[in-house]
Image (cartoon, rainbow, N blue to C red; front, side, top):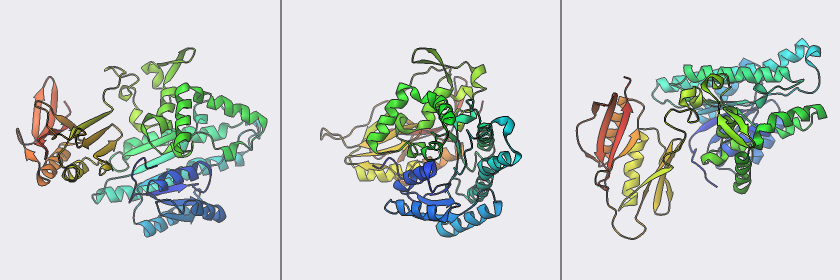
Length: 430
């Protein structure tokens, strides 16, 4: 199963030698990503590397204690020496501690140990990765992903586990802050309230099992059960589902966001939270960090529009070469070939080109235009230049600003090799 291509990318997974971390490593390596597993136990590191040996991505392991900044910096240097870059840092290493002692019996040592591993470890790993990503972005290669493993314990009450819950709540705040500060360099900071680690939590006393069932109550929604069945059918574990994206079925964090920003209005029914309540909810992903950004409270409505757009071509190879070059300026990966079709898959939609299945020549729509979103006027200019260089035909006015209906748009237009009218658009600030 090849859900998407991560060839050439490099990811660091702290605590990647078991549990959730190993599941993340398996999912990434299976899609061609090179992974560096950081863990304190060298035997578990070797065992994890052996379990990944047959996957597409290369595997490297480092003995690292995330509570020690010197150990983290040394591991990052060794990883960069091995792979030359780091595109993603999954700060997953952590310890549990619930069910053993009540809050009034909690010792200072237990409290400090929990924070040192679960919170300081994320700080050390993210800081080392962010320095590299920022330097690389300043050199003209802006790409980075910082992902922290959080927990539903950061939101729901967890008796006899308050120190663990406090570290995860702090991680949520840290990720939101970094999402603002590092948006230009590490462009997608995420905090995943992941499913609880069976390996760690099944050893807890009965009292903690009660807490676990309470915290997992949100997972009882029918849509989530369907997603779990889908993952089992596809051979994707719950841990791998943290990073493997396949529409709405596999990405757990989208469903968790749906649960966490909704309120129950009847048996099995969910309704969006009012904005004043939503602002108090810990949000799982950066792109939903503001109420008006969420499709659940959008003034434009809660319906979905397009799943994909498909156009025809008379020469699939030439079309692929054209659109690979054109869309690379918008940070879109090269097309995935599926017989007589090619697909460009992004988080906001799918663009596809196909040879007509009826055997007749492909035609373009008279009056039709396909628009691609750009992040800046400069990106629109690069899109236009790349399209012309790849054989596209410039049409209408040169790239520039158009105004109308209170909007200011920066636009560029082309016709592709088959005559389809396409444009790149950036919405300018009013």
